Structure formats: C-alpha cells, structure tokens
Amino acid sequence: MKLILPTAGKGTRLRPFSLYRSKSLLKVYSKPIIQHLMESIERWTNFDEIILVISPDENGYKTYEFLKSIYPNTSYRIQEKTIGLADAVYVGINNIEEDVLIVLPDALYSGSFDFSENFIAVKEVEDPTRFGIVILDGNYVIDLEEKPENPKTNLAISGIYYIKDTRNLEKSIKKLYEMNVKTKNEYQLTDALRIFIKENKIRAIKIDEWYDCGKVETYLETMLYILKKEGTNILSSSESSTIVDPVFIDKDCHIENSTIGPFVDISQNCIIKNSSIENSIIMENTIIENSNIENSIIGSNCKIVNFSGEIILGDFGKLISK
Image (cartoon, rainbow, N blue to C red; front, side, top):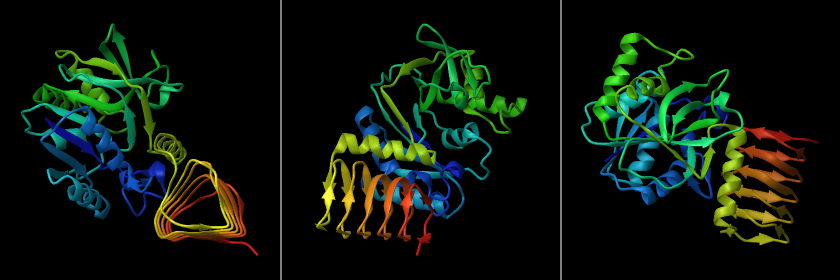
C-alpha cells in the first residue's frame, strides 16, 4: 500500500501562521500536526511508501525534509499548480498499480477501518455546506456533492480515502479533465469520485473523531483535543507561578509570576512574566509580559507587553502598550 499525503495547498485559511511554514508543520505538544497524524495512521495499517504531494516552493520542501527525517520511505511529487484536490491526488497516484490510502494531512482523526474494500471516512456535521458530502444506500456511496447549497445529508467527507482500484481512480480523474468539470473553479476529488462510483463500489465508514486543523479557530480546537488526550507536560521550570491543567510547556522556557492554563500550549524558548494565559497557543521564541491572554494564537518571535484580551498575531509581531 502507498500512503498519499496531498500537502500542496497554500493554507490561506490559516494565515498568517502558514505564510512561513506549511500548515501541516504547525505544532501542538511540540510535534507538527503531520507527525501526530502519522502516529495515528501507523495504528491503522501498514504502508511501504509515503508519497507527499507538495508545492514547488520552500514550504513544500520543508514538509518533505521533515517527514523524510522520521520516515525514510518518504518520497515527493510536485503539484505545479494548485488547481484542486483531484489534481493533487492524480499527481500522487499516477502510474501506481497497488492500493492507496489518501489522507488529507491538515486534520487529526480517530477511528477503525476495514481495508478489505474501497472506503471513504465520513462524519456527521452541523454545517454540511462547508464540506463534500455523501449520499448513501445502506453503507455504500451512491452520490457525492462538493459544498452543496442544499445538502441532502449531513455526512461530510472527512479526508480519508482508501482505494484498491487505483488505476480506475486515475481514469476517473482523467475523465474529469476531459469533461472539464470544475467546482469553485477547481478539479475536486468529490467530482472524480462521482465518476468512479458508476463502476466501483465505495463503502462509507463513520469515524469517531475528526479535528480539522485547516483554520485558525479549528487549530485551537485541535490543541484542546490533544491536551485532553495527552495531559499536562512541563519541560521547563517556573518561578512563583500557577499551572492549571492541562498545559504543555516546551523546554528552555522561562515562566515567572504567571498563571498558565487551562489549555495552553507553549513552544520552546518562550518568556512569560507577570501574565495569565488560557486556551491559547504560543509559538517559539515569544515574549509575553504583564498581559492577560485568552482564546489566542501567537506566532513565533513575537513580543507582547501590557495587553489584555484575545489576539491572533503572526510571526515577528509586536504589541506593546504603554
């Protein structure tokens, strides 16, 4: 089995944090999202190669270099233009004969999977207009729609696809190109699968949990999920401070006269003084003094002094009040 990870998207919904890094390299609990994901995938099944589909820029190669350092069986293919998920998948599966597991790497998942037949992982959602959705007959997919205005079900495609008939999926995507079928001006995998299911069965498997890390607000939700699962881990000393579980504080941080938590993730080499922080992500090399921060994401190499409230601040930002 080949594992296909399409990572070429620009991550616009995660800006400003995806400007200098791939969204799959954003960290929680000291690990990039893609590493958390890989640890889950290894519990589901075995694969002989990881194929990253990357953009032809520095962020794409950084993702490849990181994953290759942990999984030597990683290779990459380049999606020259970001013209849709179907095209990214086509780049990944082109000329592959064996079965493939395709996983979108900007989310975390929990579930059990049967690899005896083609399947799509799905989950009930409150707003199916934001997703590709499936229509079922029993447990099998009979139709799919990409972000429909009037959805027929609330079963969203969560980003996990197992295809035994890889060449048939490749043919379906080629047909999509030939017909020039686009949704929202992109070649969508959902539309390719509509062609695929005319001659191939796909089972829908409902998953237990799905945390989409592709937006700023859901990045915070993912942090909450991981902290609840992993619990408190403090790798730095703190002086005259209160820790409210669960929190993660990475190495080489200096915490002084502050209250941290609940639900705070602080990356390495940060300085926090005379402050309170809850429900927030603080990236590496950031300084926070005399501030009360909640429901916030603060990038790397930032400095915040005398601030109270919620803030989304990109890398190298400054917010210093008198």
